[in-house]
Image: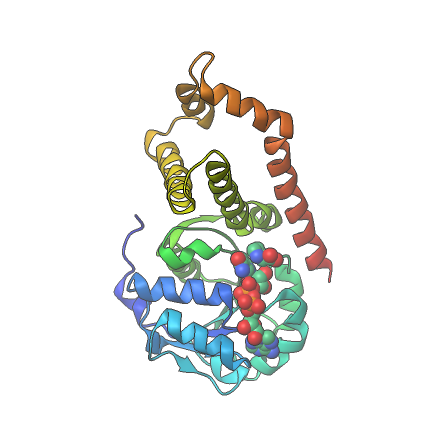
Length: 279
Ligand SMILES: NC(=O)C1=CN([C@@H]2O[C@H](COP(=O)(O)OP(=O)(O)OC[C@H]3O[C@@H](n4cnc5c(N)ncnc54)[C@H](O)[C@@H]3O)[C@@H](O)[C@H]2O)C=CC1
Ligand SMILES: O=C(O)[C@@H]1CCC=N1
């Protein structure tokens, strides 16, 4: 598990521009791990429904900012709006930004250079690609620091992301591939869990049991890779008896192209992130 956050981190007020799915997952994860108190989170979202869902997930005491500028007046500002709305939403936030406020963007595709062009010159800026399992402390995030980010600010971002899962610093050009793999990846795995359960039902299991077995099989297999450090192929071979059931099932996966489908899903999502970045 990640190291606990240090005391100064927990004193930082974080503004959020947008309080939707990903903002909620991060903020609830920070509160859950003790990194932030709900009252340190100041969110601006024009949607009442989004803010209500945010409060329900993160905890009573989160502050609803009356304007984007108010949220931007915190010590750091998380940009958690859709990439398509950035140009429209950012000017309202800029009024509240102080020159030293760290801006942390989770916008898919939108580059540091594009964001810098929409912010005051020299504003410290970090681009992050998190994923929704941050909500339960099992996120997978990567981040790239913009020019002018102080070492302490970089360390703060690393701590912020490590508190809710795995975090890695990468060169910015890799972030679109990160988006295709871990940003979008939870959705691929949910599909796999659902399909495994459907298979169980087709093979005769009651739905509830099939869903439980599918979930624990995926979680257990991931934990095996993590804890043994073995290559997945080695672990797969250990399940596959000669002329047994597994090799018969794996044959179907190969024939129907599961491996190629997953590779193409990641590559296509990464390309879509690049397209979003081109506007
Ligand atoms: N959902 C995910 O799994 C991930 C999403 N992201 C990124 O996170 C960002 C947000 O995505 P989601 O949370 O999925 O979207 P979402 O639609 O759930 O949340 C966006 C929120 O922004 C609000 N909003 C719209 N206009 C606004 C404005 N002018 N000022 C403030 N808030 C405004 C909307 O009401 C909405 O609640 C996107 O840029 C996406 O690329 C990154 C990683 C994973
Ligand atoms: O689907 C999307 O565009 C966002 C970015 C990564 C996950 N969700």
